[in-house]
Picture 1: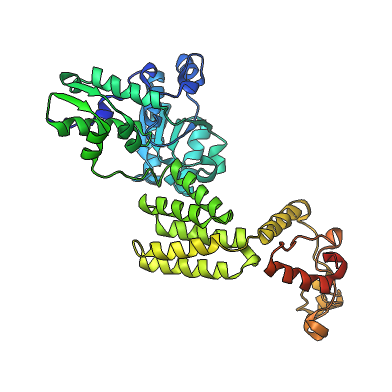
Picture 2: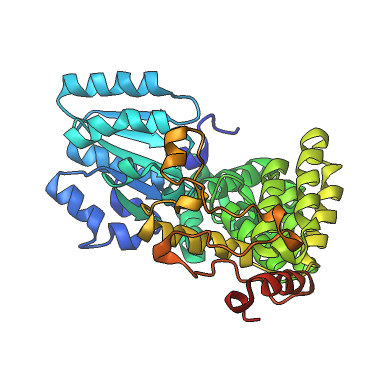
Length: 421
C-alpha cells in the first residue's frame, strides 16, 4: 500500500550530515557548518536547480539557531502575508523567514522585506531556481549573501536511492534491488525529490515484495520519457541560451532542435516569441530588416493561436532568422551611446538643435543656425548633431553585409571622412 507521505518527504534530512551533496557548503569547516556552530544565520539567497536541497538546508539552518521559523511560498503569498510574518517576528524578537521561489515575488513584495532584513528583525532565506541577479531587486540582493547549490552528482543520487531502500520504514520491508539506474536518473533529471518519488512509484507499481529494477521496467512504468526541461529552473536558461546561440550562429538545425526541446518541455509560447523578437534586432538588425518584421508578426500571431499550431510559426521564424545574415551593429551602437552618456550625460544640447517656442528663446539664438535638411540638395545638410565635447564620435558602424554595405555607402557619400570615404 502506497504511503500518504511521499518518500522524498519521509527521507528529508534531519541533520546536515544526512544532506545529499553540497559539500562546498556543508562540509567540515565550510560556511554552513560555521553558521550552525556560531548559532547565527545571515540573510541569504539559495540559488540552484530543483531538488538539490534548498528547502532542506533552510529548515536545518533555522533549526540550528532555535529561532521561530516561518515559511512563505511566493506563488501563494503577497505583501499582506509578508507584513504579518514581520509583525510576528517583531513580537518574537527575531525569526527566520524562508521564501520559496522568491524570484516570483514582485518588486513591491520584495520591497516589503527590506526594512525587516536591514534591521535584523528577520533572517531571510530565499530559494530560487532563477539567477538572482535578474530576479531579485538590487536593494534586497545587497543585503543578502548568495549561495549557489550545485546539481547533484550521479553518485550522490545513487547513494540517496540506496539509503532510502535501506532506511525508509516502508521500503525496507521489501526486497529491492536496483540492477540498472540509468532510466531513473534520466527521468528525474537530477532532481532528488523527483527521483525518490519516482523510485517509490516504481516499487509500488510492482505489487510485489521482491523487486528488481531495470531500465526497461522503469520505462514501462513511467510509460513516457519526458524531455529534460524545467521551465522554471536552470535548464530553462541553459536551453534558451543554446537556442539563441544556434540562431546567432546561423545553424537552423541546432536552433529548431532547441526550439523543439522548449516546446516539448511546455515552455510558454510568448516567451519563445519574445526571445526571437529581441534576437531579430540584436543579432540581425539592419543586415536583414525583414527579420524584425517577421518576428513581430510571429509574436502577435502565436499569442492568438497558442500551442500546438504556433509551433509551425515559431519554426518558420526560427529557421528564417538562423538563415539570415547577421549584424550586431545597431546593438553595439546603443551600447556605445549609453557608455558615452554615462561619461558625458550632462552635456548641453547645442544651440542650433534646441527648440525655440518662445520669443526669449529666439533672442538667445535657440535654433538659429539649424539647417533644415529638406531645404538642401539630397535632403542633407552637413552639421553637428553631438555636443561639442564629443563631436566626431562614430557610434553606429555598419556591419559587413550586403544591406549594411549599402547603408555605409549612403553615409560615406554624405559624411565623407567620418565614414572613411
